[in-house]
Image 1 (cartoon, one colour):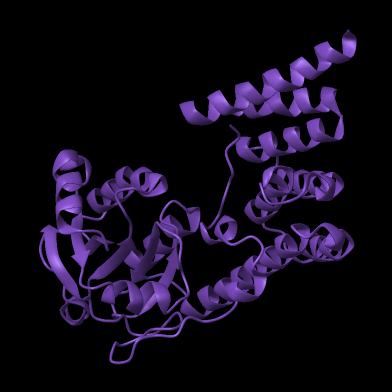
Image 2: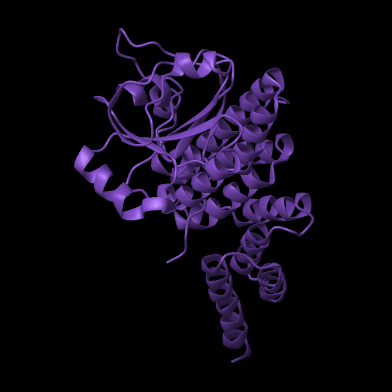
Length: 328
């Protein structure tokens, strides 16, 4: 089964209800809310500290500590993938006043058992939320409903950034915050651009899932190609045009997918195997089998994780199979 690639879990969760994706959630009264980068980080309302020492946001700011507040769950596969990375980062910054905290809204018994089983492989602070109040103060305030998701709190006690902890942006911004080179105003501009890009994706797939809206969807897709030179965004657009389960087969814009994937490959100078693999698949879907094989091989030659390589090799076999069928 082909794996859907995402930058944010929200994208595939609500592919058709575009309007609802853009509506801010109503917050419960009495809870301090942060709503944009630079706001003071809300207090943590924790039911149980499962691992590590309790974290007080006011004290952390007084001590000029950097705090990462990550929201996760034991049932979430991407969350499990982020655990080794967060552990490595906690070790990397152990002498630089950095605390990484994972917050789950699950029952204590579930979380405690999971954490105990992983032992030193999950070497950072872990806590269970109190009636989801911390999640509401962070996740809902920023209208985030996909996990894992992490908030980076600077030494001044203000929210510097938030993103998936597996995103390259997370490591980049965390390092800047720790070393004191972070530019909040530049980050706000980046965040605003990212939000516009995400809304454009929502709009595109909201239209693409409706059979008679293909022409309107293409207009939005062309605007995305014209405005955003972000290879990850373009790769996401291409891959989900090809495989999103709620896009009717007749509405899959293979030309747009190939253009987006090709641009992503150009922007990464053919040095990102996942971008190459997406482009190869787009070419294959268009019937350009020889080129698909060429780019499929380039993806494999660049390497990747064992899971990635297995996926790339499976795709290459598909392209080769198409060549064999044509030869017959």
